[in-house]
Image 1 (cartoon, rainbow, N blue to C red):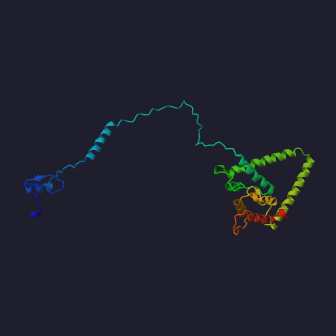
Image 2 (cartoon, rainbow, N blue to C red):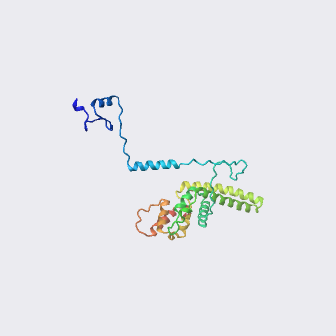
Length: 270
């Protein structure tokens, strides 16, 4: 029992509760305090930082001003100049094609007309990305690439222009001559379709052999393949499926020989 007594300081009994500052002269008073009394705790000490924060907060609270009232402007009588509706589309100014772009598209269009295999706008758009000149340099910068929609629109204008020229020439022909010409054209078209079908069935290589905007058959016949760089000759061989894995020398002639032999299988050589 005596071991549980609180420590005495100058014959005073202090409350054993942590933080309580109560002291009594008799132990019975301490017991009564523990059973029924209230602890008198010392307030926690504040640091200088706490005092600075509380002081700053009080100053801010004293300076708070009410928000200003907004004025309501009646716009019922005002006319707005903005068009009503959903968000408007941002239309950028249409950029004109450069002369290099026009020449490239015109060459692809004419090549498709002469070969009977009309160019696909999507394949032409991909061809512009890898198109090179005779020295193996890129023809177009990335900002000059066109979309398939732009190419299709350009081809449509060329076809419409060609049709108008054909119709204007037809107005100068006599009706009987026009009828005969149309009949001959129909028969010629039927014969061409029949011959084309037979050639496709018998020959694996179709005339003309083309790569991008170049007619390989014509270039081979005129011995003009040597004007291309080696890198371009490699690309042409790869496009036509010609095996060049065994060529180790850095010369044009081996690639030109492979291309000439490939063109020998075309119907234009027979």
